Image 1: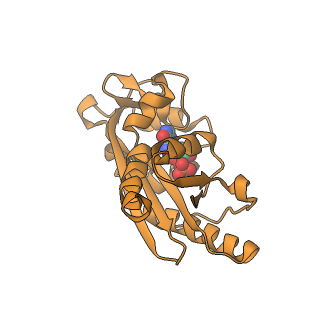
Image 2: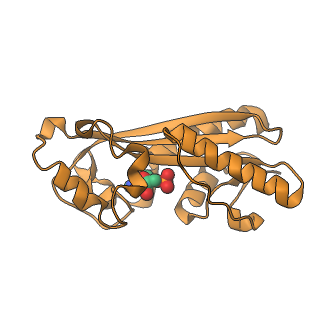
Length: 199
Ligand code: IMP
């Protein structure tokens, strides 16, 4: 069975990736599974740039620790709001202290009319194979910014990000994964890896 390291310890991200990859003869390992810690500065200008920084750092950390090259992938994601010229974008994680990002965003959007509240979650994944060759997969989820926080599921901007008439925080994990930016990027990566590792 091929082992691929996902550069995360986030249980929801791991579960989603393992579900999507379950049909292939691929085992997705977390950083904890391989006992590697790695938290590089995500100072890229793009989601792809940041995913690449993380993937390369993990690839190198594994090689340094164990002397072998393993296939790895890392993701980077965020929220791009049209009325804010794409902000918070790559700065989504640092836009406001954890738990206050929705309130700050609603404040910035308070005078923006309904038809100008469009936004999307974007996710970029960079995969590096055993030989050091890299490729990218990406996904997006279109939606809009609501007027108040609704729902208790999810994290980050989920309580204000609406798809149809519900926020992502009002959806179950399975409902969200079926339409999410990360799910779309993982499924694109799956299609590429299926050709390489499948049958
Ligand atoms: P990361 O790349 O998964 O670490 O995400 C960066 C930041 O983007 C997070 O800290 C969240 O603020 C935001 N974000 C990314 N994906 C989501 C999502 O699915 N829901 C809500 N916020 C998200």
